[in-house]
Amino acid sequence: MPSPGQPYRCGVLTLSDKGSRGEREDTSGPRIQEMLRAEGYAIAAYQIIPDQQALIEQTLIAWVDEQQLDLVVTTGGTGVSPSDRTPEATRAVIEMEIPGLGEAMRLASLRKTMQAVWSRGIAGIRKGCLILNLPGSRKAAQENLEAVLPALSHGLYKLKGGDADCGRPE
Image 1 (cartoon, rainbow, N blue to C red):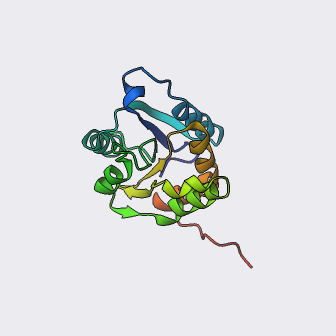
Image 2: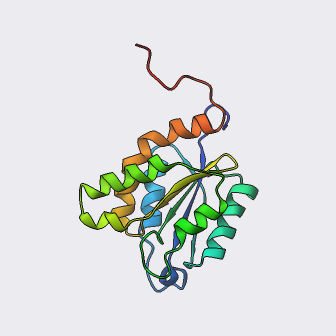
Image 3: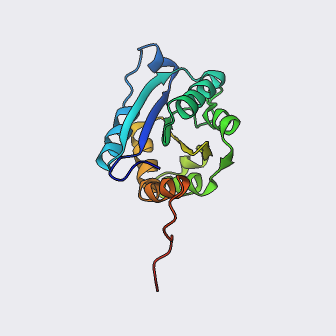
């Protein structure tokens, strides 16, 4: 758990073949960073890599195991295009899936567009770090993060060993 007064350390990983080659500007990664900073999180890592499952897995493992980040937010690769492999890469490296986060994001998106049924983003835990998959478009990434952001700090607190009660006294 971060020391009192210390923010959770986060990484934002953009998955985009064109973005990694400099052919497309990443707009979702910077927006996610803005949103996290506004909530008091510290951005410790940011990278744009191609949609390649093995590379995604390697990056997630390095950020969690070596950099010991508290939260990794990915953007991109959650649809059904042949190269969309982010959920598979995430599942390959996590120890525990947290289905409620993915469900909450899809529910919020479904209120805006029926196309949200195609989103496959998941969330899970690896070695005390939460990994959260967001869609690749700036708008969808923002909407999905807004849906779960209020719950993240409490979940990270519990994940890091916080022992305060979850419920409100009656």
